[in-house]
Length: 75
Image (cartoon, rainbow, N blue to C red; front, side, top):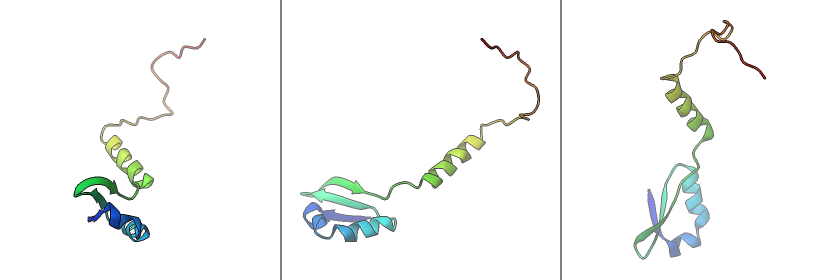
């Protein structure tokens, strides 16, 4: 994690963004107080895989070609 004052963040912002793109987290402070946290966006692929992993522990997949046991109602 990198911590920097807002006054030091403005000028070399590209340097900090390069660090963020490499996985570093940047904390921007103002008068010693945390003002902002800059992080890379979450990978959509990784997030999707994590959701599928959680779903796989509870999902029940049956044979989708078998007939259903209830009557289908239509209008």
